[in-house]
Length: 248
Ligand code: PGA
Image 1 (tube, rainbow, N blue to C red):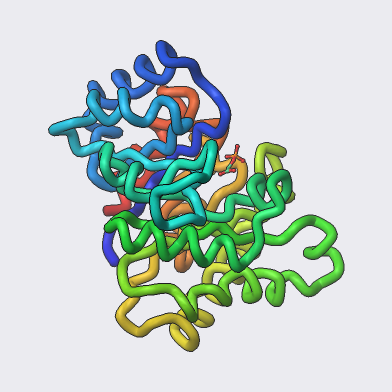
Image 2 (image 1 turned 45 degrees about the vertical axis):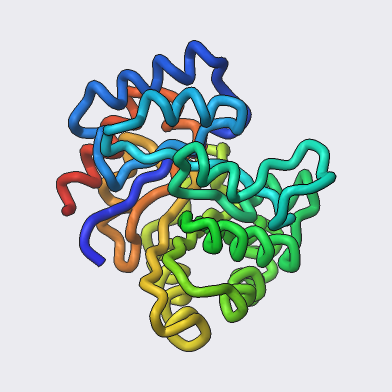
């Protein structure tokens, strides 16, 4: 697939005012206000931001979704139908912070993927090994185990984000060789195990910054980036989008 996809993951940051200001600067900038750029904002700010993004190319994403499909007595949950209703296009599923702090595992993540697809949005399944798993050498098996739910997901478009846990928010970036190895392994696994109709993009995430974006985005089988910290700064995010725009 031609073109790169850039998704900013704001995590639990911003307030109503700063979220709006950040989106306004991205909207005012043709480098960022593109259909292949999205921001995944905190749940409470999605609806007002969706109002600002209306009629613009920039896309909106959620950081999580309920594993429960239907409305009901699930206090605190936000369903896929609700996210779709207010205008989200992407939903992060199984980010390593969700796996680590909220004990999310494959059965719930499969339900989240399917709920997102059924609501007509694009799930972004996040996978990646911890430092310990990398050092022990079994990191490909860890990633394949996380990918295994793709054999059971419904039809539709989805994205995979490879984010080595040891590179998230640490300033440590995987080497281009490491990135190419994993991305190629993920694509090969998908060809053999995922639905043939699935047109799968694989993003890299983990300390992507203005300075390293271009070389990462030019790496074999890298279809875009999932950007955490650097997406909170309009100037840095702009430079990442600019690097991606050059490669279209
Ligand atoms: P980071 O986060 O860019 O701050 O390392 C990436 C992510 O967790 O998606």
